[in-house]
Length: 623
Image 1: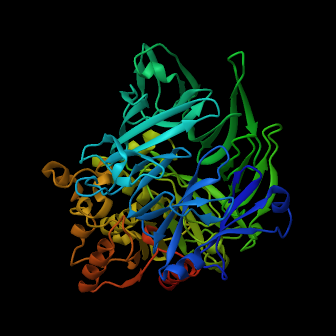
Image 2: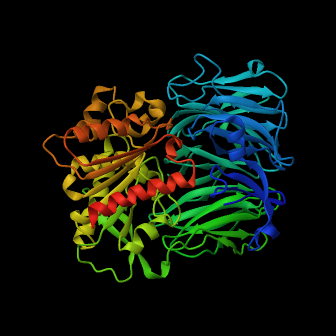
Image 3: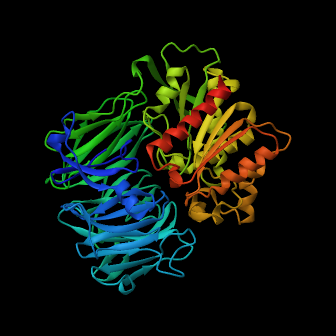
């Protein structure tokens, strides 16, 4: 994956020689070569050695359009909390006396070369109950942080407050967001030192600006100024209208029964809109001509895969797109804005022979009659005899879409499941259950709050459908999920232990009675509800895995993995559940990495070790 800034392409790279990684650059001409020449910009191994502490690179924010003034986010041992340092991308060095923030879950963004918006831990009362900044300040270069001007203070019960300047090359709009829950926010415009409320739905998302207007994604139906718009629709809006002045709203694209708008990337040359049709991606460019009409262009990519726009050049509008499928390794294409013909630049080396395998999409039926799509990746000669070792991966929450992936599961070493699973005779299943965003906001909302059980029922329907088709049986079925997916697999394991023979559970939420009191847990109450409210707990306790373990049940063999440095989902969830199951005589394996944050790993070696443990656990119980 690369990012383009001017003539340079940037890439973060980890290998055996650089386990912590290097941030490096090259030109497009060099990048097209088999062995391009790279220049190292930032060496994280050297940085860690100098400070005698391991640091993970968590990205950088650079000031457009040139992108040479950057803020680098550095995480000790991989947690969400970061240190921020200003970096000169041209000179490849940190700026002495530049912008710098100590360790915190900070939010910082550029206004101009000498000014930033900043939210951080300013002291007592400056963070929300969720552990994120609630105060936004404007910080001038060369002045102490203590003298930064306070612009906005959010409610302590909100999730966070952030500010950003949106640019499209001609216009600039400053936006303040008070995120009241994971799915809602108050939106304001900062203009001439005055803060004005924007009349947008709380759950709408501002994706950027195009031709001086806001690009807005709706997550619910909306009626405004006698105009009606539907859930999932993308709009172009005069911001003056949202301040109560004159202006217009224009619909760009609407979803339908099978197609939803996954992402919108803005550029001066048009909007790059990624659409999912039955969980398979297509990419279009929408450009508004001078006569006011939209020119819509399909950008041709292979079918039955996932697409992600990884970088758009601010000046030319040229962009990079990554394509991958279950049996096609990640492939990076360069697309010129003038002809929109994708040019394959790089493809990851195959880690298994994809020609031996096939991909099918099936649909199960959940308890309420809803059709649930799932992908099956298997050898072309697989016999449907009920004896195939099968591995289901799913997530089902937070509007996260699971699309075809060469890794077989997100955040895994690309291609690992091919070597470790498919080539050994295993079957891989990706289940697109409700709670995710594969079919738009309605798909997510269907499993929110007191409908959480629908995600579990969807998952269980996939398992039973696999049995019905004789692809596998309970004796040979293993399941995996991490984070919210860890809640999923432990919940379904306690609901129906008879369906599975092995479970892999990573960085999980499990004790839903106390989740809101641990680390960032309070920020997820919009997803799960508040367990401190008696009525909500009466529902949550029906599925909370920790509270539903029974002494007279035998549960599938389970492997937990987590990280000591996870500052998002507390490792106590996994520790408690492992201890409880062990005390009751169940088969439990447990691994806790000492770094890596919520991802659970900081280096490729750590990830490879975890994957080896996971697949060893599955194989030993499903053969």
